[in-house]
Figure: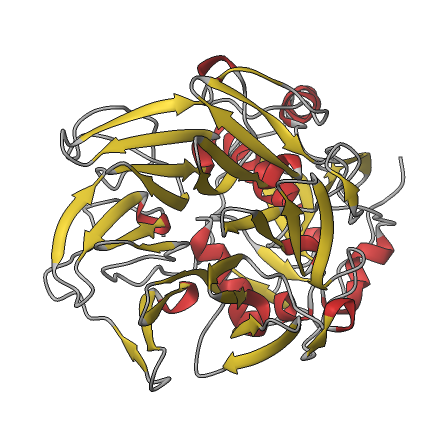
Length: 470
């Protein structure tokens, strides 16, 4: 075993009182987690890290090494917001210019480096879904180690009525995925609270509005007065009967799918993989399955892959051969689907008559991103998380903190740049756009006639009574 390289001294540390050296962790097992906060595979690993952190708290330290893929992810403030959003309770080292990444010869997100109590590298493991292997290795290493607790100064979550709202849906009223509070908030367009669906505690529970539980809910769609929710953290699709005021699960088992190939079956018997957004088209429910890098469809009680091989890539062509990368937003005009393909920073489309996938704007591969108004693949977006069809395409260009549109000529143009922070959701009525301004914990309203932007106040809305670990 080789000795683990020391950390550079010129880097920023978060969730800890002061910078630490590798030597300070001697006497405890150290698990390095190389990640970037927009990566779905990295997000999937967070529950595994929490499990290990709780199980071996007195003899294991987890240290997340944040090596940013996107330019926006290198911002210290944005990383701090991600720590709060995902309730990370261990130190985070900001790996500027991939200094630590290169010294540990890392090649993929996520990668875990296990270091023993004497500072020697035991094992390097790449990829998500490594809980059992890491648990076994750590269990072997902790024998003979003296238990010793260590405390860190964690980032503090501000108390606000909304917490990291992920998506918003404008119908006859406003439906807000209050993702950080694990609930759905229903209001008028002026901000009067009509209903709160969910307890505010993360969980998977079917019940009345007051008793039901979600986990990081995201995209929503409404059909025949029933609200459908992508319950992302639970890997499930939930159904909310707005008249009977009952929440039920209609797809998913609560377990994350480990299969990347096209699949399907009875909806309640199939494991899903981070469904992020939904849209109805006729009698079919289409799902942006971010974790599987695919588009799925559901009819009656059957759910299955609709488009995408499961490879994380950008390939156009027939739906059986095309590839997506973390699709996170979906919309339709009845003839086409449009997808916000976040990891390729592009908008993709699927012609429902020809079953062909094409790139509308941006992208080309996983590392073609930026901020350029142009046509087709010469345009540049940065980790776009939502798209909305309302006579033209509107885009939440999340990591550029902008709202853009694609006109009938295919030109992608910036329309709104005013003070958004990672807007992740967008929905339209005939007169207004509604934006989930995620890192500002706010919902913004844009008058499409005057182009005036305002924030919606929710005077009667309070944060749920939840004990955050921060």
